Length: 343
Ligand SMILES: C[S@@+](CC[C@H](N)C(=O)[O-])C[C@H]1O[C@@H](n2cnc3c(N)ncnc32)[C@H](O)[C@@H]1O
Image (cartoon, rainbow, N blue to C red; front, side, top):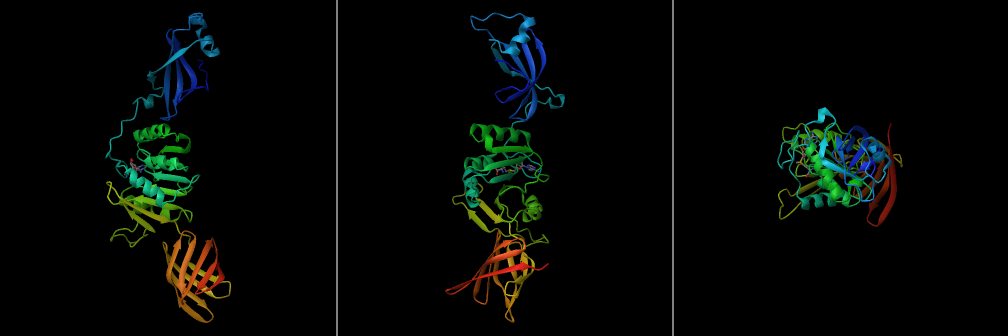
């Protein structure tokens, strides 16, 4: 087996020869599982019986040409190349350990499954778990065909997650990024999951609310209503909540769909107007048409779909930026209606 710059062995990408002696060679390499530089010590092994023993001077050529020289890679001899990383392996994570904004406590697998069900994660979609712990939400989403990213600050948990993803055969659809979730741009996600403490959950609420309309957000236990001291309270109600019974430890999944933004004045196709006030997914306002002013009832946004009732007519419209288009339904009659946002 020949090692050359650019070759790989197991999960090590070899970059440069940094030493050579009677026993073998030392190569600089990257541990792709732990995403860190290491030194690989490669010992020369017993040659096959028909193989000439090479002298030391020719050994490098022999290694490089791959000339029948077998090598034994001694991973036990991993030396960290980067002296700043000389602390070796990250400490093994301990369940319950402190984290920057939340400790590591795992979501029970039954609730993981429920959270992904309620989010209706589809194959090919992107799920991002904020504070991904041992990666279980990410790995389970990938097993359902999604692409999934875990954002986690703890080195040990990132390493464990990568190994588990490898073991579960989903390494190609998963990524674990060691960074602070507060700094991380998760706007590309179709689905966000998290299990964080209430304070951080509320801090993230404006960022969540400004994600692309239609993005689904699912949390374990904590919601975004806010406490009584919260000036925004009552905040953002979940669109859906499921409580597992019997409870496997943590049993509540809350789900939200980021609503389109409709606050303001709209001109109806029939020249009437619609004035909307929006509070998260709740919508109130007035419909002015044919000389009448009708107060809206049951106004609600589910992602990009607006529904309300006015004078017994059920309105539904798809919101596309500054246009809405849909149907008005009363008894057996259904007609098309639409509106454009007034500049
Ligand atoms: C309660 S655990 C949830 C783990 C996983 N999402 C689950 O549901 O099983 C919260 C995780 O967030 C991580 N964490 C806390 N603050 C963080 C931050 N600011 N940035 C990234 N990760 C963080 C912790 O290390 C911990 O693993």
